[in-house]
Each structure stands twice: as structure tokens, then as C-alpha cells.
Amino acid sequence: MSMNQPHPQLLDAEPTPTPTQRRTRGFGSGSSPSPAAGDPSAAAAAAAAAPRRRGEREREREKERTKLRERHRRAITSRMLAGLRQHGNFPLPARADMNDVLAALARAAGWTVQPDGTTFRSSSQLLPLPPAHLPGVFHVASVETPTFTSVLNSYAIGTPLDSQASVLQTDDSLSPSSLDSVVVAEQSMKNEKYGNSDSVSSLNCLENDQLVRASAVLAGDYTRTPYIPVYASLPMGIINSHCQLMDAEGVRAELMHLKSLNVDGVVVDCWWGIVEAWTPHKYEWSGYRDLFGIIKEFKLKVQVVLSFHGSGESGSGGVLISLPKWVMEIAQENQDVFFTDREGRRNTECLSWGIDKERVLQGRTGIEVYFDFMRNFHMEFRNLTEEGLISAIEIGLGVSGELRYPSCPERMGWRYPGIGEFQCYDRYLQKNLRQAALSRGHLFWARGPDNAGYYNSRPHETGFFCDGGDYDSYYGRFFLNWYSQILIDHVDQVLSLATLAFDGVETVVKIPSIYWWYRTASHAAELTAGFYNPTNRDGYSPVFRMLKKHSIILKFVCYGPEFTIQESNETFADPEGLTWQVRSSRQ
Image (cartoon, rainbow, N blue to C red; front, side):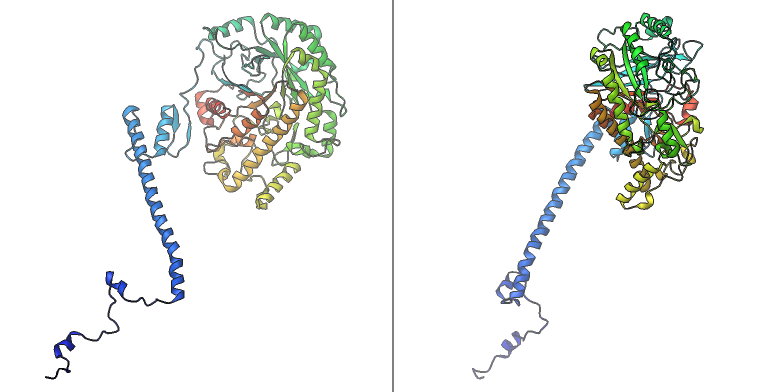
């Protein structure tokens, strides 16, 4: 065999590679040239892919860190649940979540938590009632901050102290020196389920024996408790429509009687419809000047109420006080100066908040009219304020002097426990609503609810206030936010000017307690009154923050109806629950 001839076995051992032969992997692959070697586009693509790979690696590391944090959180939760089960005897399920924990804590605090999450204060957790032999006496709980004071009342259900409808009601104001609560003696003028705050008491409503019996309820050691001054409301009939004091000697006799009862002072309503009755800018204070002079003789204090509303038909002795005559003349040509319901009925007891910035009152806006009245009062009686005779001034902000819409007018046929109606259908508030809807880009929202029922409807009878109703829809939330903001804006503007007018004098604002239907999801009666306070929202905190900004004393008015437990359950009323929320919201 020739040396140049290849060996057959060697030829068979080195077959020619086929095109489908797989490329060597592993370390051996580095020795073979890359198919992209020398290709600039491939190198650029590889350089661009490097940041992406780094980003992916960072995301993976962040996922691991998130898993570690979640494990740590679950470990803490497990130890908390174990401690609650072992040391607190909380019957928490094996796979409890935070909803279970919150529900257990709420039940332990005396609240009722329903399966759907609805939570309210149990009726069994009421504040202590007075002894059975002393019905009709209200307990007072006073909470103070340096600039903000409120009084919150709980009710004793029972018959009055005597054969008349006389009760010892609690009102609130401030002590001239300590800003403490004030108890006001009043007599209810209506024997109905819902007390009217316009009712003015007779000076004879509180006798010596009643004070003695009432003091028995409060027997105990109160040496370290703050002093609570007592004020009695004077009837509004003592000043006639021409601002003249009626029966000065009778007033002296009544004040002497009150002085013998050791009351600290009296509450006097100064009516806009009397003082500026006939001509704009012409104020007549003569009757009030005479009255304050007599009060000064007996060394009693005065709490003044500036009433920018009418008295309706429930005044003492049937006295009817309307808005000023010149305002009523304007209203004959322009009835939209009054609050208006969906049917177009006007409430003539107070001016609509829609004209706060509208010059419809002979060249003045509603806010300017209120400011001029407050400033003139302060100029007239500034010396009495400096002497300390006038201890506080209450600013009327709506119907009955309360901060609320006139949603429950008896003149329109409303009766307790009706939900009331929205009062936003005058053209000025409707224009404001249209502007708000346009700013949200939903012009079709520029309307009031068409399924909110009537004055005496129940929440479940309406499509707006029923459980799951339109009050919680996108439109419902928009409308209720707007409706409540009008209320807040009104009081903010009035109090800003009151601060200028009174120059440091303590001022008071009256807030109503609208407690019927409180244990429903929508809180319908509160919504129509302007307090956006359903179960999933705190409607009082925005109001109280604004009041606190102006260093206002809060007067929380509890009407004190007499109802049975069955009636309370039928109307889902909860005055104690509302009182608790107010106390919590104002902190």
C-alpha cells in the first residue's frame, strides 16, 4: 500500500459535517467564532439589551424584597391575632382579616356590627339615665378645647316634672371666664314628638322645688368640676314689632324671680325683622336698650341671639315675627330670595343662601346685610360688651337660627319622622348647581334628585335614600357634596365677617341634632338638612373644622322628644349615637 493513499479507517472516522449539525455548547462554544462577529448592528443590539437585562434582574430582586416584607407583615398579624384570642378572648376565625378584627373590637366597645358591615352604637349602650323617680331631667356632658366648646345631651325618657310640659333642658354656651357649658331653662310650647327650637319658654317654667329636685340628681362631690352657669330664655313677646319694651314692671318681677333662683343670666333674641323692620340701614334698638338696662339692675349676664330668621307661628303667646318688611316687599317681585322645594313652594322664614353673593337686596348681598346688622349691634352695645354684661353672641345661620337647610317645615306639612326635602330649587342655587356640574363636565347633573321622595317619606320608600340607592352613585355623591358645601361656604362667610364685627367677643353657633333615621345607611334626614353624613362618610368633621378655624363655641341642640323604644326602632332614631359622633368629630 502506498504511503500517500489515505487509510480507509481514518477516512471513515472524519465524516463531513452536515448543515444541520448542532453547534458546540458549553465552554467549547467560546472557541468557535460567533456568526455575528464583526457585525456592528448586532453589537449595538447586544448593548441595548444589557440595560433591559439589568432592569429585569432589579425587578426580580424587588419581588423578593416584597415577598419578605409580606412574610414579615403576616407574622406580625398572626402574633396580634394570637394575642387577641389568648388574652382578649376575642372569638376570631382561623383565617381572620382586618375586617374581623375591627368588627370584634367594635362589638367589644358596645357597637352593633351587621353582616354587611353596617355599624352603629347599640341602644343598650346609652349614657346613664336619671333615677326613675326623677324623669325629665337631662344629663349634660361638656367637652372643651381652648377655643371650642360643645355640650352634648342624653335624654331621659319619661313624663315631665309636673303636670305642665315643663322640663329642665340643656342648652350650651359659655361662661364669661371659663367657656364652660350653660344650662338654659325652657318650657316646651309644643307637646309633639319633635320639639321646635323656636319655642320660647315662659319665665315661670322653673320653680324652686324643681331646682331642688333636679339638684338631687346631681348630688355628689363636685368640688373639682367646672362651674356651669345657668341661663333662662326670655320670651320674645316682651319686645313688640316697633322695638318697644312691653310691660317693664312685669319684666322686673320676672327677673327678680329668676335672681331668687340664683340663675346667672338670661338669653335674649334680637330679631332682624324688628330692628331693621321698615327701611334698609335704619336700625331701631330702643326696646333692647331698655331691656338690657333692666337686666343690668339685677346684675345678670346676657347672651344675645342675633336672629336672621322669622319666628314662624310657634312663638310665645302666638307672636309672629317675620323678616323685615322691606325684604318681604322685594320678595313680592323676586320670590327666589327664599329657599324653594322641588314643587316650587317657598319657605319665607329665612333667606336662601343662593343670594349670599347676589346684590338683590336693594344693592346689597345677603352676606352684606348680615354684616351691617352685626356691626351696628356691636357699635350700639359695645359698652355693655366691655363691661361684661353681654357674655356671648349667638349668630343665627338658618331657619330657627340653626345651621341647616329648612328641610322639615311644619308649614309645608312635614311631621316627624319624615325625611324632609332638598331646598335648592330657587334660581340662584340652581345657577350655582349648573356651574358646579359644568366644572365636572356633566351638565346633565345640573338638577336635583327626582326620586328623593317627599317631606313625610321614609328612606326605604325612595330610590335615592334606600339601601344601595342613588345617594351613593356618582351623581348622588356629586350632588350631596355640592349641597353640603353650600352650607359650609355660607357659615364660613358669615363667621368671617362676624369676627370683624365683634372684635374678639365670644360667638356661638347652633347645630341641630337630626337623629331620626340615623341607624340607616343613608341618614336621609341629615342629608336633606345639609349634613353629608351617611354611614360611609363623616359629614360633621368638615363643618367643625371650619367652626374651629373661627374659634366658635358650638351649641349642639337636642330637641328632647318623648318617644318609646318601639317608636325609636321604627324610625331608626339614635340620639346617643349622633351625640357620640359629634363628640368624636369635633376633637
